[in-house]
Image 1: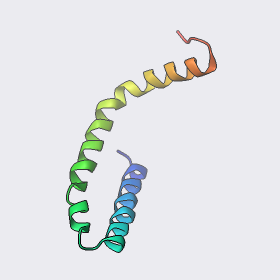
Image 2 (image 1 turned 90 degrees about the vertical axis):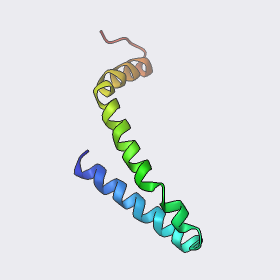
Image 3 (image 1 turned 90 degrees about the horizontal axis):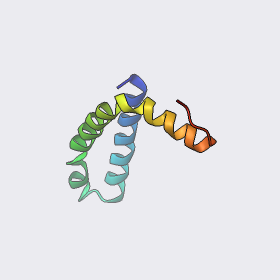
Length: 70
């Protein structure tokens, strides 16, 4: 997870969290409660998928362009 990913996740959490506190302050804490688990799960899932991504991207590009790469 690079600096760009960390910055993007942090900005998303702050913006969405701020919106919850502005729109519904009485229930915002319930919306914020699962966020650390969601962020942790997405990081773990991204690390599990990272080794397969180049292979999948190669197949996806070849199917979009109409030719097969060996």
